[in-house]
Picture 1 (cartoon, rainbow, N blue to C red):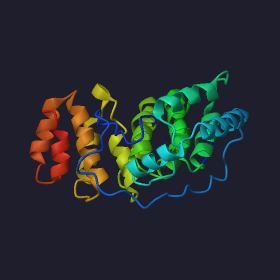
Picture 2: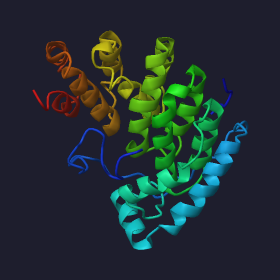
Picture 3: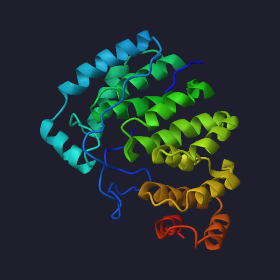
Amino acid sequence: MIAVMCAMSDPGRPLDDPSGQPPLDAPPGQPPYAVPGPLPDAVPDSGLADVVLARLTTLYPAAGNPFRAQEMVAYMKGVAPFLGIRSPERRALSRAVLDGVPRPGEDDCAAVALRCFALPEREYHYFAVDYLRRHVERCSSGFLPVARRLVTTVSWWDTVDHLAAHVVGGLVAADPELGREMDRWIDDEDPWTARTALLHQLRFKEDTDADRLFAYCLRRAADTDFFLRKAIGWSLREYAKTAPGEVRAFVDGHRSLLSPLSVREALRHR
C-alpha cells in the first residue's frame, strides 16, 4: 500500500483510430509544452526506480533525433518536447532498460511512473505508461491517486487514454469498489479526469456496468469539450461490440441530448 497524493502506442495514434491518423475534426492543440508539475511530497523510495531511471536517462537521449523530435512536437500539437525516438526503437530501448530488473512492487511502480512524468520529454511519459500497463496487476486500489496524478500531468490523449483503459480500468476491474471513485471523477472540473471515468470500462466487454456507463454519458452530454464528447461516443461504440441493441436503444432514446459528434462516434460501425 502506498500513500502518494497526487503508452504505449505511437505518438499521434489514438487508441480508437487504428489508421494512426488523428481525427479530422480534432480541435487545435493546447499551448506548447505544458510543464510537468512538481513531484508529490511522498514519492516512494525505490532502488529499482533508481536503476531504471539511470538507464533510461542514458539510453533514451543517446538515441534521440532532433529533426524527428520537431516533427513529433508538431504532430502532437506541442503538448511536450520530444527526444525524437520512433516507437519501435523506443520499445527496443525500453527492453534494454529493463533487462535483468526484477518485477516491481507497488511502490516501485509509483516511483518509476512519477519520476518519469517529472521529466519533460514525452518518451519518458510513454515509458511510464507502458511500465504501468505491464505491471498494473501488482498494484492495489491504493494506487488510484497515483494514476490520477499521471492523468492530470501534461494531459493529452496520447497518455490519458492508455492510463484510463489499461491502468485505471485495471484497478477498477480488480476492485469494483473503486467505481464509487469513478462516480466522483465523472463530475470533475478537469476534463481529462472526467474523460478517464468515461473510458475506464473500455476493455470490460460483458463486465461493463452499463447503467454506470449510460449515466456517465448523460451527465457529460451537455459538455462542449471535444474530448469529452468524443469519449462519450467512443465508450458507447466499444460497448456496442458486446451489446449493440442496448447501445442503439440508448442513443435513439437520448439523441436530443447527445452531441452529433457523440452520436456519430457511437454508431460509426453500426
